[in-house]
Amino acid sequence: MPKHSISITFNIQEKLLIGTSRITLPPDTPLTLSFGPLNITGAVLERNKAPQRNLLPANDNMINLPASGEARTVYVSWNLLATRPYATGNLISESGITLAGFWHPLPSVDMLYTLEAELPDNFTGISEGESVTYSKEKSGKHRLITTFIHPIRSIHLAAGPYTVKSRTLENNIELAAFFFDEDKELTDEYLDEAASYLSRYKS
Image 1 (cartoon, helix red, strand yellow):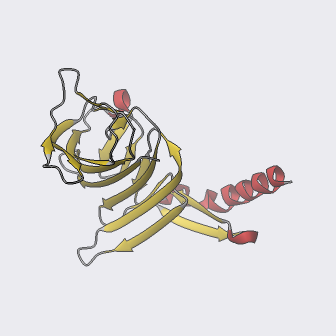
Image 2 (tube, rainbow, N blue to C red):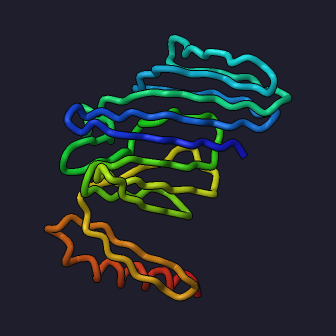
């Protein structure tokens, strides 16, 4: 399967997302990358034993790569200014981050995703992922890494100054609830309901 590794950071004051993508394409895999509202700052194609090739989006802000008999890697850097959250589904603010719209290069085929997000101090986050890990750097920033092993077209991210509570069920299934402080009294209720649904649909 094609693989899409995304790394992002934020400038909260400027409502700015800065991102890079590394897309690995198996042989005989064509690709169209759509960039929509993204500002592309660089795009490069790498092939085995061949010089790097700079890629430029067409007038429709897309890059088209026909199928090739060899494996290839595409590197893209971009940024996104999230100034219209209600129209775009993308919010970057001191109270929270929601990336639910067009926020990363969108491929024409489903891919396996890995996301690495550097979050502001006191933020935690969640995205699609079979594995989710957190770490805290000396600067105080939090780093979230998720890997999703099922092919999909795009992923999402929610982050904020959440209170997080988790619960481990049988078979090492872990539930986690993310709430703002003003709603954290709902945590146990939501965990109970989630556990109930899992039990119901498992049987």
